[in-house]
Length: 330
Image (cartoon, rainbow, N blue to C red; front, side, top):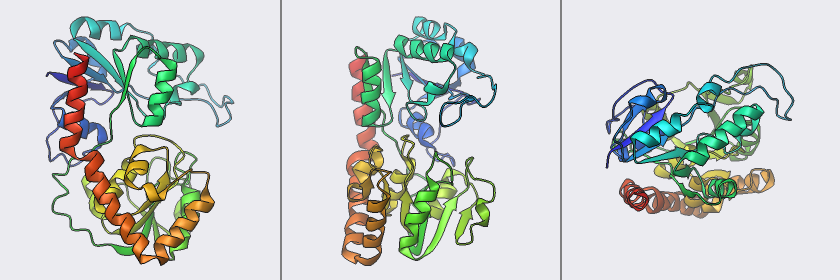
């Protein structure tokens, strides 16, 4: 099959197995032997059996409660209003939308952009969502459309040399913003009584580095991040934003017990004993205490996460399932 991915990234080509920044979308492209083409060049995409669209999230100008706080123009409004899906469908066999970010993101677009975005998805042949809960969202909006999950994926080429050396420290899966729920994760992480760490991201808050008992890792390329992650014994990720779930999957690969959001498939499937409703901080704290003080429970969670990673997210299994879905759609 000839497969193309289109996104806002500006490069053209395929992803090698040893790419140093093997993020989820790169892993998908590599696993499907797909070529990436910049979205703005959609008119040049011809003869593909399957075209996967990762549409840019765009800019928002609403506060958390829906109040307008600025007049930021969404730079992708023109694209959303164009006929680019019609062009792609004329020149290729199938066009699929891949969820980018939480399913509700487009709700904060201007009204015109919300409807244009909806119309884009209406024209696609199918939708690929991050998690099972997301498929229910899209099936509700598009009851007559094929909706599947496209599971998060690891390409292990650059990980094979890493021998995990778990030190007495805990990493939280995000900064102190609503998007990541870093404050709650930090409070729960205190139960372990060990050094606490977070990785810098776009959401790192002003003065967050002044928290006296929280260390920060500089933002790292994927391969470097995985190498550092392998040194942690515990993880907490009470992120309310339901998205791709890479943090929980990365932890499972190394057998690092991770307390996190039950709505995220990688957490629910790989860390079932530690999957919680993100608002249930009480339960998360009890689980942290149990991981710290019950060696048998810790070992069971650690070994199960590695086993469940293989059962649900192994590359060979991922490729087999995805290729079967794509053949069924032809």
